[in-house]
Image (cartoon, rainbow, N blue to C red; front, top):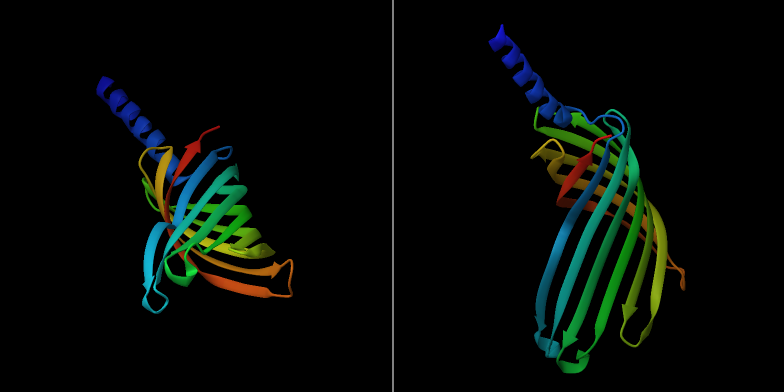
Amino acid sequence: MKHISILAAAAALAFSHTAFAKDIPQGTVSFSGETSGGLSILNTEVDIADTEFETVTVNLQTRALYFVQENIGLGLGYSYSNINNEYDGGMLDGYETESTQLSFEPTILINHSLDDDSSLQFGAALMLISQEESESGYEDDTARGTGIKLAGIYQRFLTESVALSASASYASYSLDYDDSDLEFETSGINFGFGATIYLGN
């Protein structure tokens, strides 16, 4: 009987550690960080203009969710994207362009367990976008817009409260520039990697 009790206690302990990976309980709060495209530094030489330019790209995303019921989370995402070009040499020496985009994203996410250590998540978000573009010798140009984002996320739990993730997302949005009649429609797919921390209630 003593051995049976020990086995039962061990099974209960093991289940308590793996159940979190299967289902995310109501009242859980999660914080995620992700890079999509990541940080890149590229150097390009333009022979005909006797110049070269360096492109630095940063793309980061964060998200906070509260699970209003088991496996269904509501929250807010934030995306930051910056592309900077600096020219060196030739007629364009010292010339610089920069584009910065910020997106606030009310989000709903559904978690679906695959096994004790992994799950698939499906998310949808409304994108509220602000973009600013600057160019040497010119006034800054700003744009605002809205869009939607749909995402599929694979999570692998390292512990009951920490998971690594790989994601694919589709975004479609439009931007209207403040100082002109220009309107841009943009859509595409991004792939990202990140991590999530879960805090139980």
